Length: 502
Image 1: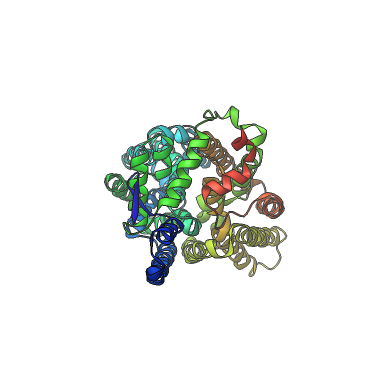
Image 2: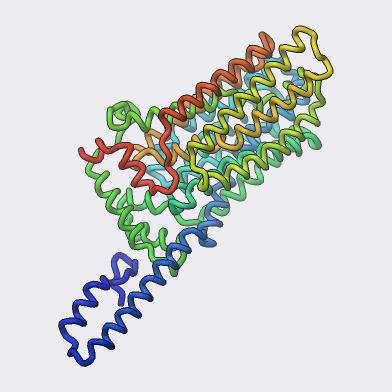
């Protein structure tokens, strides 16, 4: 027997059903009634087991929706990976110096900061799907500008536009995926964001070894178009729909994402109750985030993003070829080795995230990244003192690969996963914008300064990155909460309990 509530079916209480049978059934037939009740209870138990199993197996709609979303992550990866294989040819064809190419490489992050500033506002008011579509328009225009560039200014404009697009994508993709997935799959699915960034970056490295830089920019438009044309066919976030008062659409979207035979009443009720509680509060501006009730969430979110970037990742992947050259290695060997390590380690991180939890994987990733940076620093130190000249290039390669591999295991994906989990929906837009902005600001500092730092001291550069990775271990151990196996509402309520009381 079912009762309909906002287009969702859920079973009536078995206790009520049993009580009605007891009071209205003669004693002679009560044995049969009790037998029927036991059968009914068994059926309810079976349904609960089926729902539990179905929550651990993603529906086809959820899988396809996530795939469409992470095409945006792939675009993110192609933008980051573009500068490394094209550096020498662009500098020759457009007659750029090192400082000018550093501007070209780092201006992506300036565009991303602009995108980050408006990302939360656009995602909150227009919705997650429209925000992804809007970002792809910027990326397409940017890649076209780079393709036809005849001078440095067209390169800068194109790179800036692509940056605006990926700044928006870097916030909205993990948030959207976190909001559409059940709690036991959320970490794994959100980490696919980083896996697709890695795939985009790695394939751009490889393709860039065989095609010229204009063709590579033109190829960058393809994943943008795939996502843009697919967005009308996926559902919007049920949590965002509930937030803006479109409750029936929220229920319908949730049912579609979980599968038509799945009982979603409990999850829909949690979303609705939490949203109603938060609607009693005003939307917080970025300034309004600096209140006691949001202190822990903000500290964790900002801290992880700062440490992620000052650990050196964007300097290393933006200018990987120049690192391998300065270490005395072939560009192609270094690039192929990075791809061979980065994709499998990122994939392993995706599968481990919902099994091991966020904190253990972050700690392991930070320890390995610290070791990799130390080995790279040792290699350049041996070069400086002219010792073990045959060993130092191999040591540099091993150090970079250890760093990239362990970074890909956890530090690449998990800060974005946690960012998408820890902020309540009434501050998620402004908090997400701030956290993403800080991430890209730190990325710009590292990517712009990296070539100059390497000229000053390659050893000192990698030792500095090692120190940051070491501090990351302490930060994670002391402050980062474990969010595995908890609903978004449970996480946010525990972190922001003071805000829920107001």
